[in-house]
Image 1 (tube, rainbow, N blue to C red):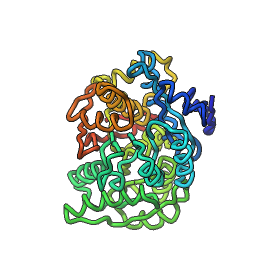
Image 2: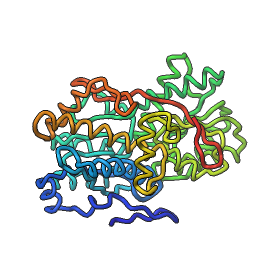
Image 3: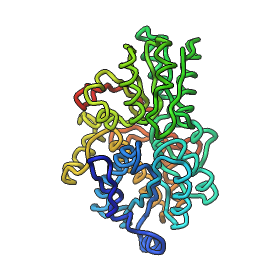
Image 4: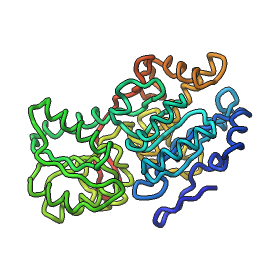
Length: 382
C-alpha cells in the first residue's frame, strides 16, 4: 500500500494498482486487467485534489470490479505522484506509457496535462477525464482527449454573468502564473469583453506558492467589487485571509479546480461567503441519481471516502469511462481504438442522471455548471 502523508491526515493512494509496476503491470494488462495510469498531485500544496479525485474514481471502479468488471476484465488505476509539477508529470507519463497502460486517466491540472500531451499524442494513448477545463486541451480537437467536465470558459461565463446581474462590474482577477491561471484569466476577460467590460486589475501567484503579498498590494487598492481566483486551494485561502486583513470587503469567486472541500478545510470560519463554480452535481443532495449512487457506494465501501466535489468528479469520470468500455466491449473486443470509437458512439445520453454528449467531432461531454458557497463551518451549499 502506497501511503501519502498530508499534514496530520494519512491517505491510501491507488491501493492495489499502485503495486503493479514494470513487467508485472504489462503482464497484468495481458491477463485481462484494464490498467489506467494517473499522474497527479498526491503530495504538496495541491495534494488534496489528486487524493480526492483518485478516491472517487477508485470507489466506482472497485464497485464495478465487484460486479465482474467489463467483459470480466477488472479496471485498476496505477498512480504516480507529480506534486502538480509539469516536469515530474512528463516523467511519470513516460513511465506509464512504457508500462503499457491502457489509457491515461484523471490527470490533475492544466500545466501537467499540457506537459503530458506530446507524449500521449506520440504513443496514441487515450487521455480521459483530466481535472482541468483549459481550452488548450480542447482546441484544436484531439481524438485522444475526452473531457467529462465543462470548460473554464463555461465556468467563468457563469461567474461573470452572476456578478454583473448583481450589479457588480468592477471585477479583478487573481490567477496562478501558469497555463491554468492564464486559461481562467482568458475566460473572465472573454466574458467581460462581451459585456464591454475589462478586469479592473489582475495579479498573479506562482504555482505551489502561498506568497500572495504582491497580489494583495496590487488588487486591494483597485477596490474591486469582486475578485475571481484562478488558483488552487492553498494560495486561494492565503489570498482570502490576507485580502480581508488588508481591508477588502468584496466577494471572492473561484472556479472548480480550486478544490472546494480543501478550500473549506483551509479557510474554516473564514470561508463564509466564498463562492465556487462547480462542474458536477452536488455530492450532498441525493435528489440526483448520480449523487445517490455515489453516496450509496461510499456507504457500501465503509465510509472510507469523503463525499465532496473532487471525489464526486472522480466518481463521475470513472462512471463515464466505464460506459465507453461497455460500448467497446459491445463491438467485440476492448482495444484503445474500440474504446475511442465506443466512447464517441455514446452520443447524447443521460448517464445516471448526468447528461453527456460525445461524437466523432466532439469529446467535450458536458457544459454543466452551477454555483456553490462556503458556509464557514466547513460545509458547502448550492
